[in-house]
Image 1 (cartoon, rainbow, N blue to C red):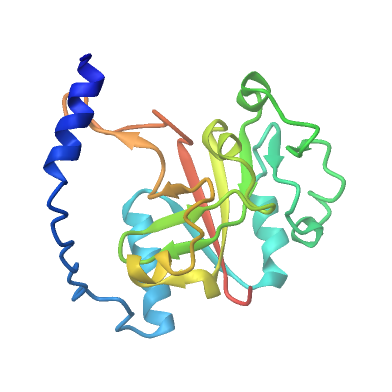
Image 2: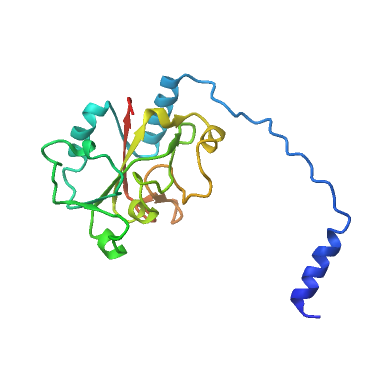
Length: 212
């Protein structure tokens, strides 16, 4: 008998009596206890505590805000599903700095690295932990585009903000490629000195849109 067969035999033997599976207690909080405005304020406060820059605007003010945030960008990538209306301002309309990463035109890592910024939308945001979740949908794109450029401009519809994680999980399709973002990429592993941009964007700009 080989090692593999021996291990499997031991597992089968250990499970022979078919022990009952205990019911998992679910007494943790599963819904918000704050109002919508208080939840949004919590998200803003905690994102800023994570060193992210946050703007709160209406959909009418979104193009102008994006224009300001991308003012110094040498080039930026967008997923194919972002609404063109978000770029409907003189400085971004027909912008030759904008590159779309789409099926049939996937940018390589060196090509992404040559772009300074990325603009995506988001699926859901958790105020309590200041976590933004991307799920690879058409307006968020594949994971690589949000991890390689140095600046991530992330659009957060106010309607997608929840207070706690269990609320977020009910809105997420767990089989999708999820990216969880809590502030700019950073580590304090080396002599407890905070270093940003280690394994993702160095700068996170979050735009909360009140009427999306």
